[in-house]
Image (tube, rainbow, N blue to C red):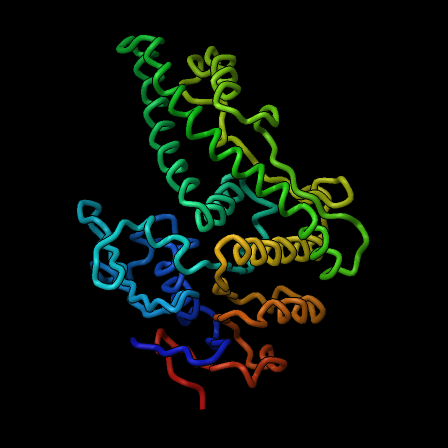
Length: 350
């Protein structure tokens, strides 16, 4: 299937479960080297098929034309292949070339569900603006896996406790980089987050964000090592690493009260939308590129006022929308190229 996007806004209209979201997934794979939602490559492979392949042409802010191709097989033994202009690259090399902001109904779970969702949100966002963050994240994940495995071997009597020192240093080195980048991000978005919430909701109560479950604000390598040492006895007892940025959580609060426990559904919608506006501003500032916007069936979750706030977000950005009703596109119809999607088939609207 070949699609050409000639308008600032492209909309895919159809009933639920017709394949609209698959198109947005394909765009996210080209921009990030992976899906925004699917945790495993096999979940992107069509039923009955052995692999998927997505290719697309885009133009960076500098004017450089890019042809990106990503393919992956169902067999874990076959590596994913990513190419830019015909040259093989690592999946991580795609990150940041085409900055991406996505909003979907399940993003409300950023407030309500597991801290791992919020850490993943932060990691995808910050990896797009700084390669050092992406590299530190990869190295930290490998070191954490090795340290936890070593803790298991120590418990079984196959390794000595002093062998932890090497992996402690690795975690401290890479974890402090990640922690400092997250802290800088938090400081930068404090005012915009409150501004966008007030603008969207019309409320004067202040929306704030805080990084929780990471002891102390001084995120240096030395402090990291010190805290790992303090937690070692617990680590040895339970066989896993109990201190570090992998335990960190992003908490949103409204008027000083945690949103997850105290917020109404409308307040949570407004807060997540404010976070997305803030994300858009942050990415544009740090990449000096206009992010691509993916809006997946969000109109059904928003009242008229919030829909209009979201429409303001579209101005000046290439945007891809999925929706069940053409009426949702009323205010931007002249700028919108519309496709109809049914049973996986895509055709231009009459």
